[in-house]
Image (spheres, rainbow, N blue to C red):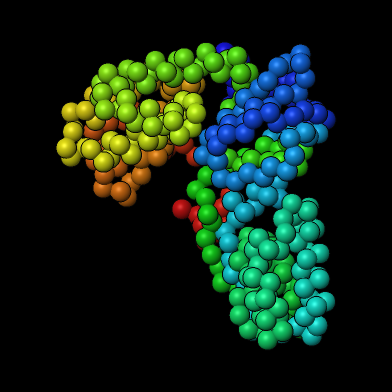
Length: 317
């Protein structure tokens, strides 16, 4: 099956022209030319997207982009304690700094207080001006100080626990943990594999049939990653009353988990096991019941950490 994770297909390039044909919550269908047909791009743990136009020029998959800083840096609050000499000139400089910092991908209204409040803060010299990624907050603080304002920055926290990627089609983009690429013909075969997997789960716990029916009615099709996340919520909800059904489903998942990156194993790992937290008592109860194969996979997931990630000192573990 022609499918890859976090790697652009060989026929896509920075100069590629194409069109986004279909947009769904967890995937987009994209065509570059008739020779390669339609490609389906799946988003795993999507954080943000922007869609401006179906036609595009240029494709990029990167972990270095100004829009990613919203998800990789801590958000700090900037308070003004004394006004700048010229609020209008200061605001113009802030807008220019933001445009340079984000290469035009972000606007001030994403981070600033309401327009009226921003005007009041700058003219009155007190109040919260913005809540923004750390680099931008420090940059604006320095700029306002140069205009005579007094500022205080309250450090915040990073909003994500993983390092996302950005997939760009022209001026459109999606930010997510992972991207899976494949042709729609491959997708049809994959859906068949996923369909059989969920049918096996339904034989283990017949009440899951109604869950899948509701899912397909809501989404118009089977979206495996969403459905298996629904099954996790179901398992937490019925564990006390139907422990046998939950155990049967977990055993079937363990039997279906295979080495490699097949679509079913990918769903189980990314959208079931990775979503088992360590704080929710119900999820802890599920963790305690995992069959050996699922438990080993969860241990492998939780022990992995990229060596290249460097967090700010106040965010290191």
